[in-house]
Length: 183
Image (tube, rainbow, N blue to C red; front, top):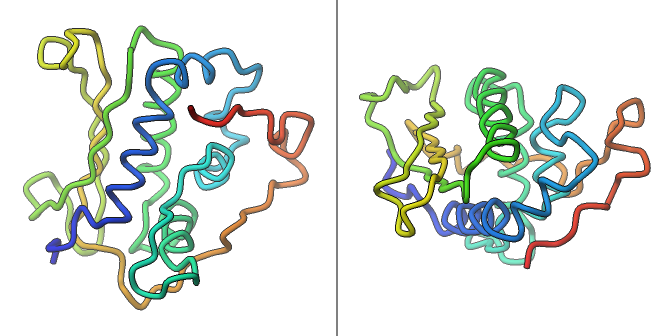
């Protein structure tokens, strides 16, 4: 287990997350009139609105399997996906990054042999730390690491590739699509 972590799809997601949560793109998120990380917004829907999903599909090119599996990881209630506490930890960290003095968020997805508390029945753990002295530019960065006990089951077909907004929540209102693309 873990031989494919981080996979090419994981690497693409990490790169997209870093691009979105650094520099001018992070400033653009700070200037939104919408709290993307409140209880009204699901993590998979925010990911969709921010344009963060894998573009590669090594197993079945053109079928968007990796994209569906990414949304499944963020939205499923399966014990093999991120549990509610993981999702809340991620949302809290990203909200803190947007409202705090951070210059960027550095994302990592790494295999864990269990030494960080993951196990087959609870395969993911989120760790949030700060990096200043060790950052390349010497500025304050948030480091968000997702420890993974195992890869997503290759037989998992995933979820919808275009998650719709919940019509009862603010995400479906006038702010829909108002997030500027990452540059």
